[in-house]
Image (cartoon, rainbow, N blue to C red):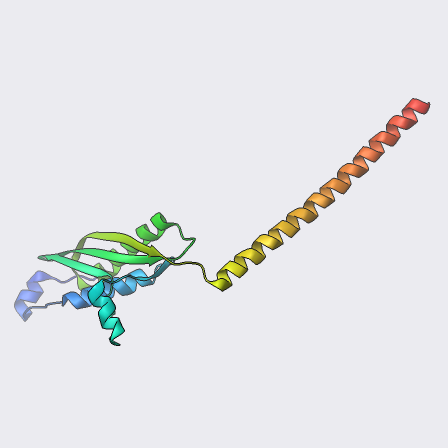
Length: 167
């Protein structure tokens, strides 16, 4: 079922105005749901609002309206290790789809600016170290196994050569 605002119905029943803040919240929440997005990044005013205890649900989103069309500029922080182009494309698609579905407005562009990247936490570093250590241990065991098979093969070939020479 496609959701859109029918201009004729709006004219007959009155007007519907969607506040920029509402569009910004939808865009921010949609972007935050994308895998690889650590958080939205806000400007000085947004940071000040958070410092004094206000929740800034539209942080990192700037809206430019032109009639029934909007352009969205998003500033995001990406998780360390994520593929930035993939995350950005997924953000564009998710935000455009959610804003259009929920508001009936046409989204002409979703511009994504990657402002920061998260540093891996101590737990992530330890996990990565443990995974690499396990891989190294598995590789060493495999090499040792291959080495012993090669040694057995060499010993068998050597004894076969010795038996052939003695005959």
